[in-house]
Amino acid sequence: MMSLFLTLLIASAILVLPVLTMPFFRSRNYFVVDGRTIIITGASQGMGLSAACQLASKGANVAIVARDVTKLESALEQVRAAAIRPAQKFISLSYDLTKPESSKLILNEVIKWNGGQPPDVVWCCAGYALPSFLADASVEAQRVQMDTVYWSCAYLAHATINLWKRPASTLSMSAANSEPPARHLIFTSSALAFFPIAGYTPYTVGKVAMRALADSLNQEVAVYNGARRSLSVPAAEKPATDMKIHIIFPMGIQGAGLDHENSLKPELTVLLEKDDVPQPADEVARRAIASLEKGEYMITTMFLGHLMKGSAMGGSVRSGIVDYLWNFLGSLVVLFVAPDLMSKCSKWGKDRGLHTGPKGE
Image (tube, rainbow, N blue to C red; front, side):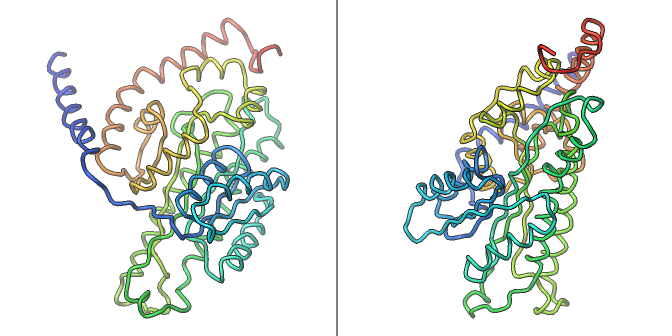
């Protein structure tokens, strides 16, 4: 037992030391947005709006997308106020992202607004949770969750990648002789995709599907990026730029969305997630953007989220030694957490019977 403990201690020290020394080294910014054009869905409030404002403060041109026109108008003013120069451009677009045709319409409208050029970054932030046990959720509610959580971003990802696969139609000699910056497709999932919690089932399955989509696309865009470097692929067929995939896994985010969520949340779910302290939307966006600038693929925004990621990374790409550290630590923590959650669920059934709804029901 002591030998095992010492082995784990030494392994932890080897993994932790590089992490502690990283702040002393400057790293390249892999997510430069100054002068670039960004689409953010679900940006009328919450994390999406915070991300839009912060990217505007870094010099980006931002198109925000949501359904509610009134909220969009207010959000656009906040984004515009964050700009660092008068030449930056901003636009709000009202679309229902659960409709397949909306994605192409959004991209076409942004291309026209952007002087004929495609967006450089597409960030999917749309979606909301309707907490419930699966058996208590109507079939309609389950479909709504898949539409708003998964399909809204899958449709946009499909349209975006097909747009970005196209070769550059016209390039100046200076542009043709230099490597253009990569374009970024960003998904916003949830830490529940790593560690499902009873009472979020209709929502969680969409977030897990989103993670699988991102993992699959990570490999698929490697094909397109490889084709850009191939000597055997005609220049007229090569995509104009590299593509990068990222996926963010926040935990609870303070705001109106969480307030509505809490009104529906099963009482057991509240107990199971008591260690999740919701973060302000500005903090989640700031940490996500900082991780994008480091070039990370799978992004979490707080300590508990890092551990949850580490416990369930599977075949996902690791972004350097830090992810291996969390993978190691998370694998240890899950040995205790998973049985504890099962025990709490079993005890709830023994003590409370079939009470699977919100408090007071």
